[in-house]
Length: 192
Image 1 (cartoon, rainbow, N blue to C red):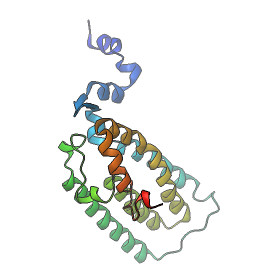
Image 2 (cartoon, helix red, strand yellow; image 1 turned 135 degrees about the vertical axis):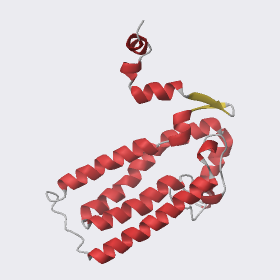
Image 3 (cartoon, rainbow, N blue to C red; image 1 turned 45 degrees about the horizontal axis):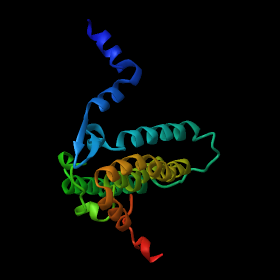
Image 4 (cartoon, rainbow, N blue to C red; image 1 turned 180 degrees about the vertical axis):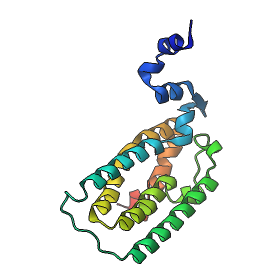
């Protein structure tokens, strides 16, 4: 039997390469179940691809949108981009230092960057890097793009949070009550 036949029989071509690899990477973690791919990457690749698709649409419709350019000077746009990249990269390093990749999905991290928000990596991209790029591109359609990414990512991230609830049932819900998803929570939910 050749390799192509075996892969076809196992559903490789029907499921797609990533689905096949993700299914084969299933591991058990603390009584719950999380696949290696989900543990390491979470919702990042899905959100990133959707963000790029929206950016491509914004690029395509920039002139046709009828929206005005921002008319910011090149120097101010460049400085804002540099500032947001520095802050974004700092948050990314802080979150990776707080929860190294080998510990993702194995323990619930509530310290470092994760003390303030549940998804600091995604928050760094959404709040810093995307807005830096939007201002650098100097058109209001990119500000709209950066704003639209927030509800999109709130939707995309739900699957990852449900996986975390499966691995850390009660502890993750308590953690959600005290932290924001992409921004630090200023007020506790129980105060309202």
